[in-house]
Length: 196
Image (cartoon, rainbow, N blue to C red):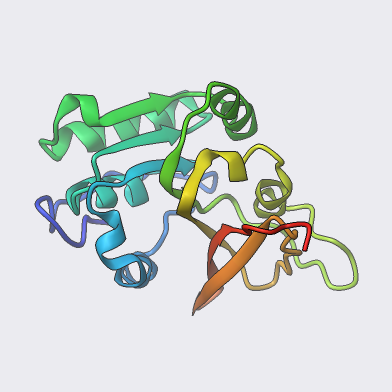
């Protein structure tokens, strides 16, 4: 896994070993950043279920102003820190929170934090034909605090398995869906009139 574009382009990232982390493939990452284009430059970024931190680190390489990465596992969080330090970015550009994503969302919403881009590519859920998804991705969509973390025209980029059929609540409006192999990437925005 590597940084694809920007000032750190070509740098190799360490990826945690084992099945707990499923890094976003470079081709999927490329499709995401092609879709986002200039929106990354100067953006405040939040990445939930950080894993290798690749989406935030890619954003910083491409000119994002700052990133907050939330990763629950201590060992994985240390690897994110190592990856960040290897890229020779400004030390104050990264805030690394070692905690549960949903607790972090609630705390940041309560303190009024706002982000231009939110990334999440959590562990994949099971196939769910005929029943509502129980996956981490669905839990994120259902979290009442998450929309409050986005600026008015901000975007939420959510990865999930194509076998995991998600129910997009009225608080969200889907702008685009990218498909690659087993991965679906949804680019969502806050619905300005969720009660309409």
